[in-house]
Image (cartoon, rainbow over all chains, first blue to last red; front, side, top):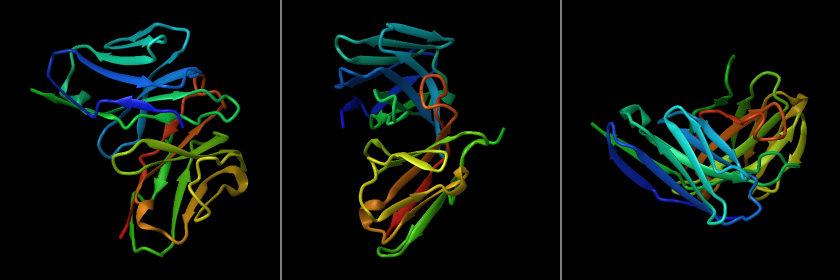
Length: 113
Length: 116
């Protein structure tokens, strides 16, 4: 399958902004997603963006998409200790098979006081 | 509304044994998916059910894996015989429609499978 790449670790101080980056290789990607996994829990959809959009904002979360560079980022403003989790980037192209999502390996975000 | 539930949460078995994982989707969700995350690697798609039919099983690794969804409700994923490389976290997800954006996947907490 196509590759989705993320850095594995990110550490930030409480109150700072976090930026998690992701690159993908499939130029036909239609939808891009950010999922969050807290310890012992499932995957929670944080945000998604159409490939024809550049930005999507929801409260403290901002998703930026640079389709030309195939680069997706998630910015968390005023990061809190409760934001510590693994963040997965994912993309999908297939509509007929629904959700053959391609995930990255996940970025572990550690928020320190 | 109850979420996607998976059982067991953790299973430890020996190589060569059989394990069956169960997933109960959200009530009314016709679409059910299995994904797997092997340690340190990406979460990989395994297969997709629409009701009781397999819509896409292109991600199933080999014929040691058998997924069923009789009656279109809960699903089971059997691994027989289990091998060491089958260790990982198996996630189940469900959704109402087949278009990700309009009906996002709801994931369960996963089953952590350890094959020794």
